[in-house]
Length: 87
Image 1 (tube, rainbow, N blue to C red):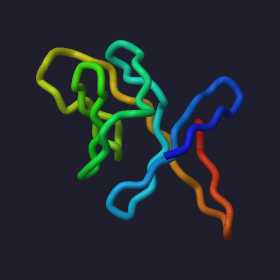
Image 2: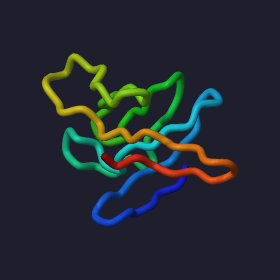
Image 3: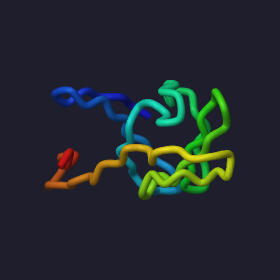
């Protein structure tokens, strides 16, 4: 997992089960860093309160209450380079 800043946007690139994802660096529940979150089976779990989000679309998977989705970004492959669609 690696973090990047593009303009005002912080994002994290990570791999899980052979798939690549670009997501926000902080949990939308309480803005806790996801740098040490558990990742597995297409899910990222915040280490602070256990909130879980689908890596594919950022939707919250918990029934603990309401929470905004995790920011997700489309990865763009061009030859041997990788980009991220922030739009």
